[in-house]
Every structure is written in structure tokens, then in C-alpha cells.
Length: 222
Image (cartoon, rainbow, N blue to C red):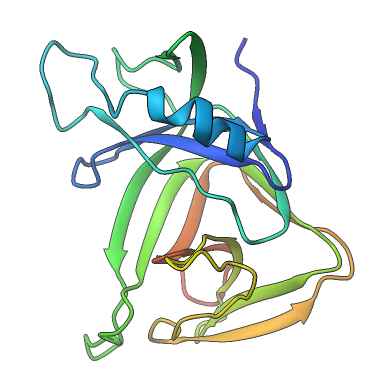
């Protein structure tokens, strides 16, 4: 029986992804609570590439760099809610020296497209993408912190669910980049835990170092 994987506050999520140009790329995850020990003892010994063939293919999995999320939260990653094709296992076990790491199939990237304004333009200084991900997750943004949102002209609301350290190693301050065309920022205090649950499809807005997930749909249909 496949059981969900949990990411505690301060923990990490290690992903192995199919190539971004491979349509409908699948994602495997391994989670844990001790990021420093993992990066020191396990991560360097994991394979950079996982193939289900005797030679390299675009469908091979590539090792991502895990990060420490700057948004105080916990998360539960459930098994992939769809049906993978034949030959795509639900779980893979990788060897890292004398240790083994179990990775669960959790998601599939359905679409990922650049965001531009109604006139086809966008802010050249920041590249935003809008994506649709097939997955089952539960993210809890912890009370006592700030809720950062992107709000669209049509009423769509996206909550900031992940930030990652900048190149200089500073991740304490949330220094939001210019929003994508047609969106603006709103902030509010979190007086209680805020839970975002995705049972099948997650709508996201992403740019380098920032990941927003939609939790309220506006007037425009998908």
C-alpha cells in the first residue's frame, strides 16, 4: 500500500523530474526533516539521472536540487492521483552509498506556459509561467505569519506556498518580484492555519524562486 509523504516545517522535498520539454513530465519525491544531514550524507551520492531503459531518453528522470522553503508550512504529498503508463512505477528505490532512498510518484506536469499581458507583452525583467499540475497535496500555511497572494483581474487568487534561498543565501525576507501582467499583490496576517488542498489539479504561477498556488477561482473559466 502506498502511503503519503510528509514534509514537516523546516524539512525538504527531493524531486526527480522528467525533462521539462517532455510532454506531461512525471515527478517523484522523497521527503525528510533533516536537510543539512541529507545534503551532506545522501544527496551527493544519489544518481543524477534515472532511466527505465538501457540508454538515455527524454523520459529519463533528472535529480533536482532540494531547497528549504522560506514559507512556514507543513505539507502532505499523496500518491499520484492519475494512472501512469505501463513501465512507469509508482515507487522507485535509489541507492546512495550504503543508504537507500524511496521516491514516490506524486505528480505530472500537464501544461506550463509563459504569462503575457493582453497585448502579448510581459515584464522582460521577470519571467512568469502558468502551469497545470496533476497531483494530490495538502499544504498548511502556519498561523502567526503573513499570507502573500497574487490576485488576478478576473478574481483568481493564488497563495504563495514556496520561496527558496537567493544566490546570496538570504531567504529570511520575502522580497517579491514584479507581478505577472494582470495580477497584483495582496498581503494579510494569518491568524489561523491556512490549508490549501488539491485533490486532482493544481493551478500554479511560478517564477524563479517563487511558487504560487490558486485556491480561489474568479469569473473566468479555465
